[in-house]
Image (cartoon, rainbow over all chains, first blue to last red; front, side):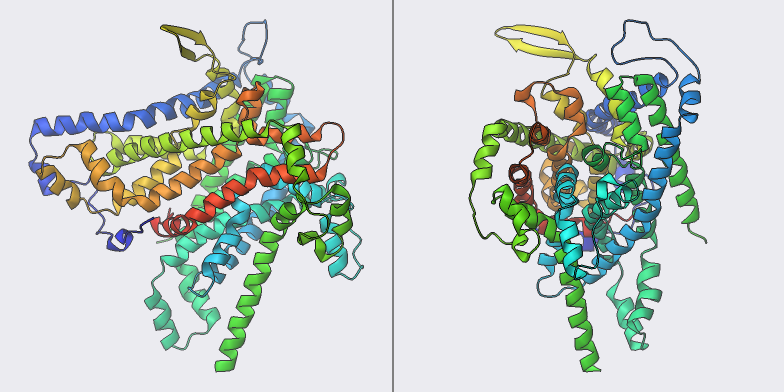
Length: 319
Length: 292
């Protein structure tokens, strides 16, 4: 694979609309043809997104206000807010919301922090840097389903995690039955989720780190800045945009917790690991209540939108 | 001062190795356990032997996997589904990004914004109405010389492919990358009489290698790893992808050696592919600037 030098030759940002003198001089027939072939090139992707993202989204929105079931002899009827009334009085839903909040509150800071630490460790070139980058990224290329299965095995009472804990504490720590205890099931899922996904956000941090000019560090060194001061006054401000990107993507990913729960605990024990998406899938498929599941999905969507908006507001540029 | 620096770099290397050990140990454990009989897996657990291929090593678990699951069929299905999704995805998304980035098309800003808006919709929330919707879609089949039209995409290959071809993140990545390629190249090619498609194919795409590598990996991973969707829409065994095979191991008594063998079998191809592309992949994400 040839790597081109193009990114470093990035030209000055083109004017909005990209009008160059040459384009302005072009004759009308050429412009019409450009319009047509342009739309022809956009169309395949646009039509597919319309058909498989926008349409089901609108459909789901509509279904939430009906009594539709996956297979039902009765005609679909409009039932107004019934599904939402039922949802907001369902203790399992509130439990799911609580669980997901718990998950997000731990995962967002810990995972982004660890990912940043990993990125800093492999930012500079040194012998073996590619080895470490690859190893740190390995969990990300492993499917979450396989990861869940693997950790399901490791979390057994006689499993690898407890054996490791006992070995490294010289027998002091007697491990728990992680996934079968309501107190430890969610922390166990949190640990494996961070293990699997930190590598992905490491790459995003790395992208941010690489965009900070090396000259800034040289200048800081000349001024006698310590490592910590270099981080505090050069690296951290330089990562402003990356920070909000990492924050938003980890939060959305955390709120959508599903695969791990589906493979490892099915929401149990005692609903201690159930999540909003897990409840939606459970009522949608196991109980075939399409409309109720759509209502849950809609609430989830609004939640994601609200939280992203709040985060965008809090991390906005203050100038 | 010099000693402090050396101490620092030894410390940094120690931390690096610690992180690497944490990242790698479950995967090493999985690979090693797949070669051992169940009894030995549990026996080795309390010592470093859990991570070493020693003792009674064989490929018996793998043989058993092929007896229990139509693993070859599942692998072929997943390879096919992922390959078609990746190839069509690269073509369609790059074409769209090309027009949005480099051509003057009225309304393209609105289109681009709408495309980016799809990024905030998690797939799980779409899955349900999507099942209902794909079951309404017409299905054309060429049977001998007559074209047959039937309704419903459930239980087919295309239901596992077509909904996942167009992808907003791929379009975004290509768009970012195309913006960094000088537009003067297009002008020069146009003066030489090249059409837009020719510019796309012969000028811009050959320069977009790293973006293509990234899009290929980011399309391949979810296609290979898909679990929830095929669980919902595919019933026939001969159409199932690899992840569904996991269910076959939890009927009656679980043999963990076989589970680990199957998990390795469906993970190793991805890891090999990733290592082959990793340099251009990580570099291109790092430079294409997922800069928000």
